Image (cartoon, rainbow over all chains, first blue to last red):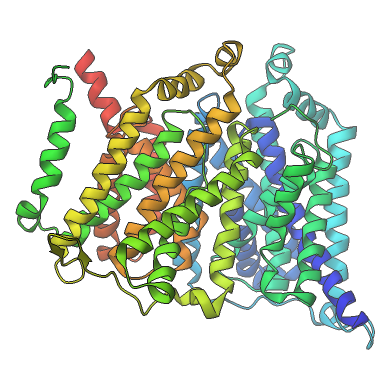
Length: 288
Length: 317
């Protein structure tokens, strides 16, 4: 029993790390540009499929490095030519635009790579369990958690220690003033979108190795990412990280005791948070 | 009160078309089920527009209440009572109750945050329908039930066998719902909603309890949405979890925007275009989803006011 619980907690932490990577990217874009990027899951799928296509040529490690970067470039292009055109209009339009984009991306991945799920190979030595007792702690899972930690750490470094991060943080508070101070807000929003999409692409590559690859992979992770943001509190990256891990573990534990509620439990948690602490665990009241 | 023909010209055209639909659908290459679907989806979009267009609240989770109405009617007829009206009543009641309970948790949110919370709440019902296999049929949907004939004291309506009887039944329900919505919108309460849409802060200064008004508007909107959902299930004699799925919520919003959010009948037009387009696209290409996505993008970039918005602007110029 203890082992079963440990297994599910570990599993939950890993799934939660995915959600957190997705949610942090979404939250960055939402805070600075007031856009809910429904196509975020689509970009995750693109990252995953690009890694799948590239890895025969550049190997697993090459795919891991290249795929998220290529995804981010696609994100920059989408922002520049589509999404930036609806900034400043009723938020309704940006939602519909990214919604349409999500449809197009999901259908295109199905068209290019087929509706059936395809296998994605991870180096054998990464897949072997670390010990016989804790069979679920494969090297790949440890590696994934380490990589997510690295990505989040890197992001926090950028946000807190670099000029770009400073500008993004200032922009989420008052974009107009930042613009008046001589920062090119267009470029700032573009780069910020790119960072968010990079994280989605990275989550995609990792998910490909863990969950398998199918066109609907993006649609299934985007809602939990919303929940992670709501629970953690919009505007707080630490909160979003916490929210992601929390719902991962919660659904992991629910899988032990009440398997049929595995997915539903996170929405119940969201309802509780909204009732008791509407701004989210680490969010500030009054921002939204 | 004198009836102003000019002012109500659009309503008269809409009703003339809807009432005579069975006479001309075959000639334009359509079939009765398709027209019924237009009316049902039109009701859904108009219900959403009550909140979206007239209260100015960005709801992206209305598929939840559509689905609740649909499962309400299906489960009632399958397990409790083989009666169309009883099923309809239960479906609507369930939808309204869920909206009333969820409402207080979300009415304090605004803008994109409201959208995110509503769409996330919708997913919980999707997973219940998906997972509760032995009752809801899970992913395969709820089957083995069908709409029943309607026996009123003076006549029997063959809802089961005659597609036209069912069409007029749906149209009658549609008339009641849209009539009620129009009445509410003309009342002082409805005017208050429009005031909130135009300027929330000023409304608050006037002493209006904004959150309470939004809550009522939300419940009204979701209730009519579950009527539409129930009719949809009756139309297909079937319901599956996809009725709840979050992409369905986006489809309702695009219907509103495409037709024209600022107009009462706009969403019906948007629904008609969407239903016919989807029906056509899915019959000619397996990649219809991409085309629907392109429609979303095109509407946002080129027709943000919707068809009726464009027409109205032309007329005023």
